Length: 143
Image 1 (cartoon, rainbow, N blue to C red):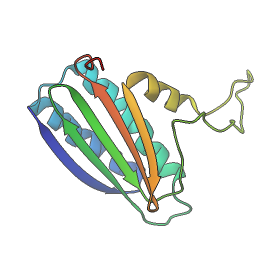
Image 2: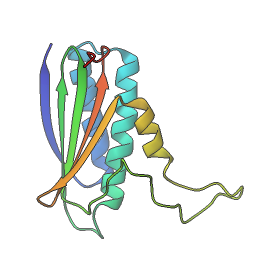
Image 3: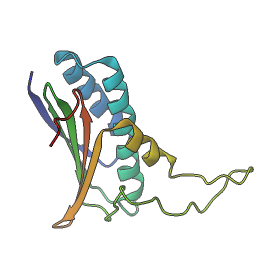
């Protein structure tokens, strides 16, 4: 059941549905449970949206690489870009705006991604951000 797929997109929001569609094809081919597919799609949309909106300044063209690795034990997604470094594992920056009720705007998407995924890893090396998302399909083995 091991399948991999690597894709590259321009840093444009309208490119996200193509990545989601390719993941759904891969998920169907590997018979992933629908709940896992839904969790991954939500996380993927949130992370790619953040990368596209915030990693690059202005209208500069950049590329975002997305790699999927699906096995019987897990779904692993690596998202790489050459934008500004941002570690999503740290607490989100303070929201600059608030709702009329005084609630902060922004930052909740990353909290949701952390809840939906089993693991998240981030590294910045050689001018490249790499975020790895892992969703376990079976309980991880005890160490």
